[in-house]
Image (cartoon, rainbow, N blue to C red):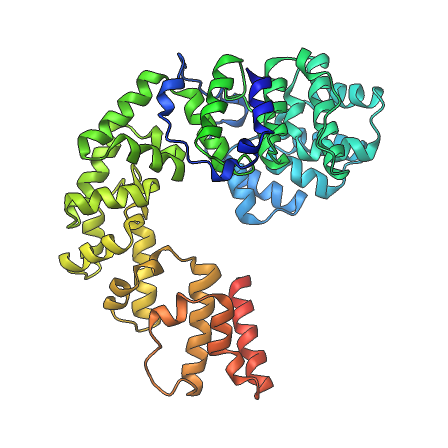
Length: 454
């Protein structure tokens, strides 16, 4: 069947998959799927307290990681001292890996630092070099897909390495053909090859190759799942395609139908559910408890059934996201119940925002910028904007202009005018209109860039 799928993909219809709108019930193709769970890498988990600071500090001082990245990695891996990781770094450098390569490897595969350099890692590097891998080839391939170093068997390691090498080389030459005799290889390689032939890029393809989940394992389940995802019009070059493939592969027909029935009982149709699936495939993982909890949360916020279902259809990603009492959070900040209802009607996604985030952004708008609470009601999208990249930088420019008297008022401009517009329009409104004053423009640009950098 896989060859038929690939052959059909090259036909006129599948070449235009992005325009497909088949009126198809995805359940009719379902076979007996079984849930596949990702195997946990035990080496990345450690309950000892006090280790995160040690790991984080080591990554900052030894590899030049940012504190934020180092802290993120330290949650996935731990070690008592720097002896073992230092041996790993020394080994990698002896094989020609530069710090940029090592940073990429550790970011994608922190568990490498816990491997025994002499008994576990070096034999694999020696094996790959013995097969003729040059230093430049070895560093490039392992920097892109470091998790192939988890593979224990030489034959499998060799097969995966060659596959990655062929794809990288063919991409460089704009040649999408892979010359390996893949039809005789394991199903996983064969399935990855099928995704490759559909145009899936490296950044999506390689994680699937080394994933311990079952999405690209087997034969029948993969082929049926791939067929359904293509027929629903998902773009193979996007992460949403991978999410949809994973969802349909891992859930049985019975489980899928049970999920659909939950939404039907709330008032949605089967067609509505699959349209939601196209927008946000992972919403299918929500339990009935989480689905009904979100429905009840919207109801407490003042939305009627029709408005709640409309929010579900437009923003399926908000389903199951609420873990706190959203109404109490907004009421505690001074909003009335009617204003809370307006906010949630205009921005259903705020059901997924943490109480801390809502409080921090609302207090900044009111206390730092002197905008009224009504400004948040009128433009609730401010709660979804990045403080570091948009809100704070732009507000600092506004405050500088107000201090110098260039806005002609002691009041800041409308929050939508300052924060909702594009970067280009903001510059035109508040910076470039002062082009005749080069010193002022330089100061404003410095404030804008300085804020973003911080």
